[in-house]
Length: 562
Image (cartoon, rainbow, N blue to C red):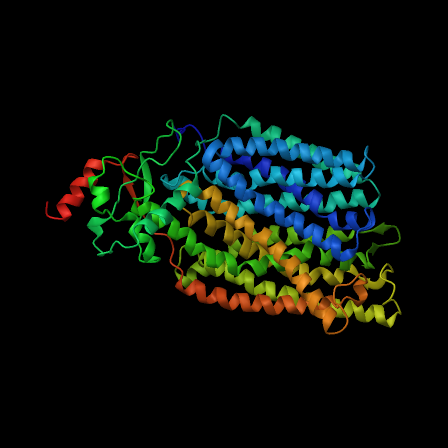
């Protein structure tokens, strides 16, 4: 039975979950922030190859959550998945520390540990935010009101956990203390896991709700089996009641949200039509007859996929922040005074600071003003919020291209074009504008995507919704690799190759212009889709989880005059 909302949940439970998320973010950014520098300077990997390796790791790390969400929703539940995946994550960071210390930068162990950490992160990411949001009861007015600001403050906590390691870990590693930097990551992750376990008696915990993929696949199969059945548009001929689709007999759900019937993807409606076979059957075949809610759940997922596709270019732009932006900074003057040298990766932390300022400003200043102008309780819609971030990401690339052209010009003026390891007399702070725009666009689009893929997903598969949102980042990193390969292949045939070993002659500014154009095209597609997108419609009803077959037969016979 689900835990009583009067005894568990709320902010006093969510705060412990924020700590484990802080640890995960610290570990992830502690590894990622200086990874490209480690590959280039310690493992002596060529620049373009190092960028591809980092993008691949980011991509894989963002796709593993799909598997983690499946395990959580189908077998373990969110709490157990967070716990076990955090232990795997911790093991990966410990082995990573050993690979750069005792094993003396052993490549095999390093990459094994790197991807073991990815596996652990894959179970953690899709569950922790959803598990924290589940601590707020949507049926309680006070908790629902508190939950409205939850995503903003939750993301602010994530950014805090992401900002500190970007300043701290690269500073240690710049001095050659790679093992200390990775060891710090392991220590923080272990401490955050311990804090998470302290709140174990405060959490609202739900068991697995059954495989979301099976539930969605049943609709496709049922619709295809009835492709010859004529849809008469008679709502009385539809199956409205839910079958108990949970695979855990101890889970009790006396109240849930019934999705209202929509007319999108009409071919799927045949899955819920009660035909002669269903009416005469003594038992319900879930691969032949699905409820309205089950069909509408699949429609919700399908409606989100075009939005998902349009946001891929946004994550391609964001991927430059932990690859080529850092490489640019590595060639620039990073000194502060005569004795202090700023690590190139540290400037990423400024993005976090920008977001820490942007999120509360958005929540406390922008939203109240937007409510007055729009009359919308949320100020602007979640799709409008995402769109603002997509628009700003175009300017990220425009500014980055202009700054890179300036950097190459300075290198040319000082005769340094053919010396890629030389420090160019141009301050690293020239990169600040592109990082600032990145931070602001992140505050709009990433928070918006989190909210969209939580609110618009069916309740039983919200872990998968979180995984789908995260997978945009993964696919974006792989798309970045594909774009790099295509650009290199084309430019090899039509002149001097771009993105070569010498960054001063790599035409990185041209590459940024290509990304700006692709982002603009993606935004145009998004604007059209956002105009036709319909938000989820629900109806809260008291109902039993178990479908009454006798009622199906009665309804069918009544509709046919029997």
